[in-house]
Length: 399
Image 1 (cartoon, rainbow, N blue to C red):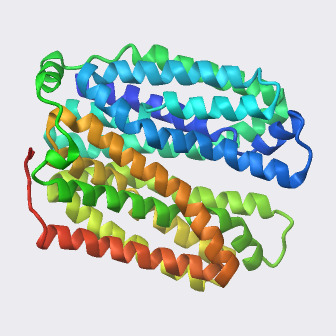
Image 2 (image 1 turned 135 degrees about the vertical axis):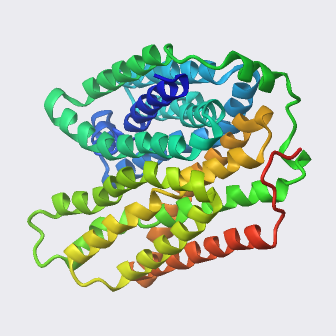
């Protein structure tokens, strides 16, 4: 097997383990907090929000730091650091005795993370140019698969083996990822070349406005996508004639997007290698915007499910195209740092989306959330169009 393919598969498995581990606690985090001595419903909700959001907030803050260190010392080292660090922290969470220890370790979990951005950087820099889009698309399916299966497996294990033991199992799974990452072999010549180049700042780039535009695109995309997450179950409840299997139906509706995303990401990445990542990004943004808007007008659960399934096919071309384009326009010496900034934009979108979506749903109604996200995505597509036709056009690296 070619070296870049083996590295890709290893990074895929590590990305799967990382996202599954970070999302695995979602179904039972409030139950674990109650087990730690918090019994008031409002207090449980507040602490659950803090414990869940703290990981992603800290990860957003430190992502550029880990990306910069990856550029300086090598990407494999950052993968090892992140996988081992998360394995240790996840195991420790199983021993906490109060909610303060839980939140502290969730903060630490975010601080030692950085696996995803390091994996993206390694695959982007070690893969031949003609295969980079397909490789990044394939890599993205690892994270999507983990975020889909994590909550399902976590809920099952929580009922089967107990809440504390779930953290031990997850820690062991992440340690397995650490062991497998040791099999990665970086191209020493490529790594030596990039680590010896000057580590310049974002604003020192000649095309800094274009690069910042990529970060804005990522933020708006994630904000629009995640704004819908808190209200899907409520929307299903409104559309259903009966609520006997509300949780199951909602799970299918949520999972539909991820499944079609997994099916399409690699293929759309391959298309971006031929026609260019910006072309794929703009077309997919327009399709996603239209489908999001249509969800405001559905009258049944099966219509919503169908639209969510179709949505995933277009979404499969978004983040891989962004990553492929970003790799194309930044110097190799700061690729890790730039992917770190992009990961920060993605995390902030993940945090802001549910908050904004919940506020819109409460003030105007659920259909307005879909209409608002549609408008945001159309503006995002317009932003990409402006960059392509009126902004600074740079096909190569610029410094």
